[in-house]
Amino acid sequence: MKKSYQERDVSEDAKTVLKVNDLQVYRESIHALKGVNLEIKEGQLSTVIGTNGAGKSTLLNTIAGLLLPKSGQVIFEEKNITGVPAEKLAYTGISLVPERRGMFPELMVEESLRLGAFNRYKGYGASKAVIKGIEEDIEKMYELFPRLKERRKQLSGTLSGGEQQMLAIARGLMARPKILMLDEPSLGLAPIIVEEIFETLYQLKQSETTIILVEQNAKAALQVADWGYLLENGKIKIEGKPSELAGNKIVQEAYLSIH
Ligand code: ATP
Image (spheres, rainbow, N blue to C red):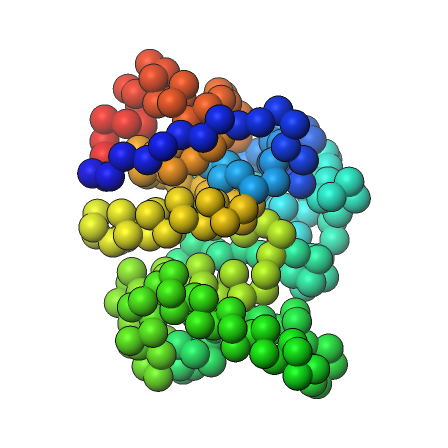
């Protein structure tokens, strides 16, 4: 990425929103996570970098309640949410933007955004204030991603890969999550689009959104993050400030030379 971002000082006092304690997860016979610990601070962008198969998606899917760990805990706002199913967690403020985006191709952009706010409706309806809030948030998403405004009446399935990723992030934000988790948003996108999307993530963290970003594109991820973890073969190998990770020999040789 050409742009240079300012690394923020991470405050020790920031509130911990999510904690992952000694998480052990199996995918059939594969021991995919072997004792993972994370501490996610409010308003910060934490990134988990690692290669294909390191266990990154398994980690996000377990936090989101889509996979059940063998042992360990996920603590969200001081409550143990381990094993709480995904459909319940979506209402408590954890939003996952999955790898490959999970589009509804037959919905228009604007309909997809409205659907993202599903957790703000009660039963079959919503108060005028809630509906007004949702409409205002749709406009905010258009400010964040002007391309989506141009495409508001277009079917999601006809968008380019980059636009679909933008829509997926915007849809995730429409739930007003306490934590937004992004699984590999750069996947399959041209470098210029990756730059555009990461610039938006950088803007989002300035507005105090708590983000967990899982990425193979270590270079791009470390440029926008406040804290970084390197996941290798199901274990956190190093954690620290992004500049420390970027200066680490292991990270440089294995992860930064390829991008
Ligand atoms: P990628 O970037 O390819 O998604 P990743 O770091 O997200 O990689 P995971 O998808 O979490 O890694 O995979 C961790 C391990 O679990 C790998 O060894 C993978 O082969 C295995 N795995 C992933 N999904 C399944 C599945 N549905 N069934 C069995 N094993 C799986």
